[in-house]
Length: 209
Image (cartoon, helix red, strand yellow):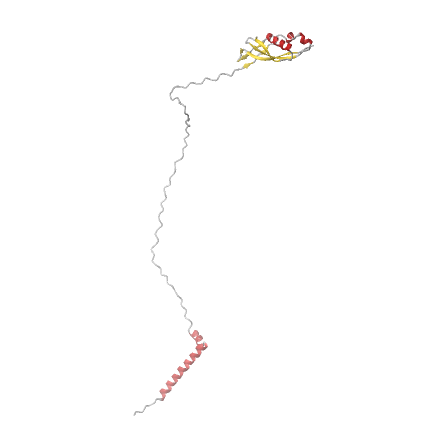
């Protein structure tokens, strides 16, 4: 039977290494439990900071197309307004003469007729005193009678005079009619020519002292 030779030096090294590992593990456990190991690690090795850099990939894009060319529409200038004034044709249904015969000229209007009424010719007429009735003088009868007479172109009275308005006395009215037949008149005229006319005149009978 072979004898097993024991190396005491090897045993002692292994024992020391084992003890050192146990002690190291104990220290680590104690350090983690108290936070000392974390602080030691922070001091020894600071935390790693990482920056995320995003690489922007530039795509090779084609250049943009040029802007479309805008064609301007041609500018049309409107023609100027020309106002032509033409005489309006008369709208009538009458038949007009289209021949070349000259139209007759209308005669000028006649001149206005100038009329002048008859007037008493006092120079060639008798006085009313010569026809004053004697009875009317005694009774103090006075008055004015309106007598209508017709006068010829020679100034004489034609026909019988008529009393248009009485004087209030029949004697005076009769005397006025007699006087009118003997009176002379300047006849009425038209454009200077003597014509026959009729008119009314007042014959007044007044007593004088």
